[in-house]
Length: 138
Image (cartoon, rainbow, N blue to C red):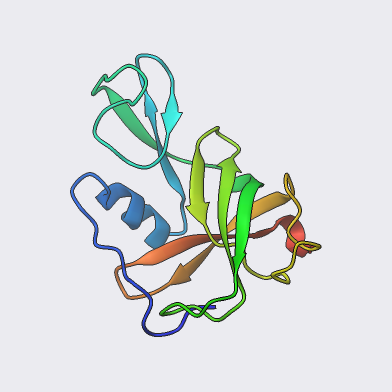
C-alpha cells in the first residue's frame, strides 16, 4: 500500500509511548485514573476532566469501521485506490487510519465491520497502525 515517499511521523515526548508500542506490535491508548475516560490521540492530560493522572495501556487492537472515503487521487506514498478511515476502537476512542488487506470498494468496506490492527513498518523507528477485516474476511 505504501510507497517510499509516505510522510513519516515524528514522535514527541507526549507520543513516544504510542510509537514505542506500535514498533513492538501494541496499539497503546491512555486512560484517566480519575474519571476513567479512555482517549486517543496521546496527550499528557485527560480531555474530559483535564487530570494529569493518566496511564498508558495496550488496547485489544479490535475496532469497527465508523466512516471512510476511498481516495482515487494519487498521493505521495499511496497507491490508488486507498481508504482513509475512522475506526472506533473496542475501548471507545476513534482514530484515523487506513483499511488494508481487502478491496478498496464500498461493497467490501461496510460500516460497522469488525476490524483488527495490523502494523506496517515505515522506518526502523516508526511503525504505523493500520486496520484489516477481522479474521481476514473482506
